[in-house]
Each structure stands twice: as structure tokens, then as C-alpha cells.
View (cartoon, helix red, strand yellow):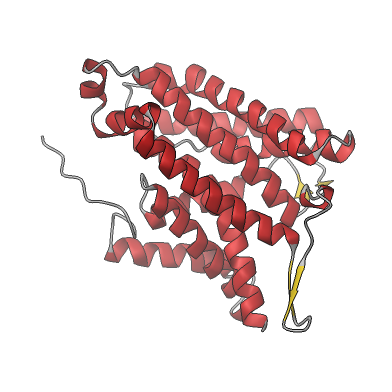
Length: 297
């Protein structure tokens, strides 16, 4: 029964990683860049929920929606100010800029809200009809946070796949991902498409931040740093650029991390996660669901 409990909690943690990884994989798949400030957008969104719901008593769903709006605007501004001028620059310049934006957001948060950890009140607790589920005569209890996290992740992934495959904006994203120059010649607004991608990824980061801090209720300026790195690992693990790959990579990463903590060592769990990633990339460099791309030179 303990194994089942660890497994379910691992899937819940993995669902958060998957939500964050979706942002990474969409931005990389379309803009061909790694937005390492993505984890810090999560942190900003979490602070918005903390002050609107935890401190001011706003409805939890409204506070998450407000957080999504703030993170969406932040993501678009970051893309417009920091990344768009470097669209044709070497990838190393973009990577260094992304790291710089990440540290900038952390420092601004520290100066604004201090570095002291804050106790985060679960947004799920503010919804009265969501209760824990008890199974096997009380031997296994699944928290409401776990249920909501898994369900929300599944809904978002299905909605995102539908959006990409069935809307004109989604088709534009696929075209830009395939060949940016050709898409522009065919009338696709490349800048608007990339901005929309950042907006969607940042909105998902807000949801992920609220769910992450609801399950692990400590908030500080570095809250998004390690989950952001692990979500990037999940995106690479599943095949960066693939939406189902980001979901699968996140779930597997969460399960591996949780089982490693339970049965091997809490101190070595992170090392085991990265070791598994290395093994997967040695066997299948494109990730579990990634596709090999032939580049003409």
C-alpha cells in the first residue's frame, strides 16, 4: 500500500513538472530557444496567488486566473524585450540572456518580498467540495491537491494538443516550428506566433506554481529554480518539442524522484533523476517521443 501511495504522489509531482515542461517544449519547438527564466515566472505567479488568495482572501479560482494574466503579460514582455532583439543572434547569446533574466526576476522578488520563506495556503483548500479520497478501508488516502493536480494536468495537455492541431493559431505554430522563413513567406506573423507561445507557456507556469506550492507549501524567491530545471530535464527526457513527450517525461521524472526518495535515498534522488536522463539520452538522443530531424547543409 505504501508503494501505491508513493506512486500516486510521484504522478502528482510529475504532473507539475509536466505543466512546466509544456512551456519549455513549446518555446523550444517554435522559437528554437531555451527559456531558463521559465521557472522564475512560476515563482512570480505563486506570489500573486499568495497575496491575492492567502493574504487578501480572494476566491482561489479568481486568484489563479489573475496569476495567469500577470504571468502571461510577464512572459510576453520578457519575449519582446529580452529575446526578440536576439532572434538572429547565436544561441549562446540567447542562453546567457535567459539566465540573466532568471537572476533578475529572483533578485526583484527578493527585494520586493524579502528572501524569508512564506507559508503558502493551498488553493485547493479554498474549494469546499474538493475533499481527500480514502481507499482500502482508510489504508490509502489521496489528498485533494494530488487529485486536482493530476486532473488539471491531463485536461491542459488534451486541450493544448487540440489547440495546436485544430486552430489557425496552432497551425501557425506548427508552420513556424517547421520552417520559420517559409512560414513568414506564406503570410504567418512569426513574431505574434512566438509571443503567443510565450503567453501560453507563462499561463501554464502560473497554474503549475499554484499547484506546486499547494502541495509543497513554502514560497520564496528561489521556489521556481529547481522545479524549472527538473521540468527542463523532463522536456528533454520525453523529447523536447513534443507535447505528449513533455507530459510523459514529467510523469516519469516525478515517479522516479519519489520512488528514489522512498526506497534509495532522499539525498541521492536528484542525482538518480539526472542519471536516468543521461542513460535515456545515450540510448535515444532525441528523448522518448522525440523525432530525429534531418538538417540540410
